[in-house]
Length: 269
Ligand code: CAA
Image (tube, rainbow, N blue to C red; front, side, top):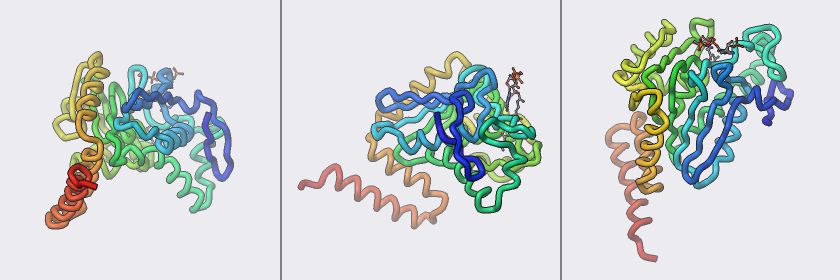
């Protein structure tokens, strides 16, 4: 059970509405979208629980796998949000639209917290994506550092077609991965991007047959775990900062990180 904050009220959301499973096996944590009969549609309660998982991630975890049960990774936001009744205990877009600016901003920021932690430098997140990854589903995959996809994957940024913008932290990684022009084209047409194109334009690291997805993710996780944790964290931090720095600034950042590594590895007390 988790608390879904709704317009200043706090309500218990049922496990059915949350639709998530969380398991830890040594250094690997797995978050599973577990509402396959509804194609893993996501609610505000899903995002609140995702944020809670991030806040309480066991210290030993180095790799986080995000996967979806059933034929599709995720069909995005629960379409009941578009109805007057909304999602039980969580309201609807119509009720959210009446919030004042500050509460409204806070509500979206809370949802974004469910996605933000997946970029933490001390972990590597892998999205294992099969079938449809629509809207919030596409953005959840984009929130991860790496995407391993099945050859039946269908990415679609549906929000503009529904009169909305992608607001679950997906626009920046999309632009970073595929470039501004391609991101504009993908979002503003709300078209589907398949596996071959996803690999070609940098949306996917690897394409495999659907039956090989689990093993491919396991193999990648094992490879990621084979490097030194502190070095991996420092390297990810460096890589994440690279786009925002000049070459000279990046060289200085490399020196700083390396001095810390060499001191940690070789300095005698
Ligand atoms: N919300 C709630 N229920 C959904 C759902 C969704 N997003 N997507 C699918 N379901 C339900 C269906 O209603 C259906 O339920 P019943 O069996 O009770 O009728 C069940 O899941 C199976 O759905 P389909 O038969 O349609 O499954 P499919 O495999 O043939 O098709 C699909 C999959 C192409 C993803 C299709 O279900 C679909 O188009 N879903 C809607 C996608 C969508 O528009 N999502 C919103 C994106 S925008 C977003 O996410 C915005 C945001 O953050 C603000």
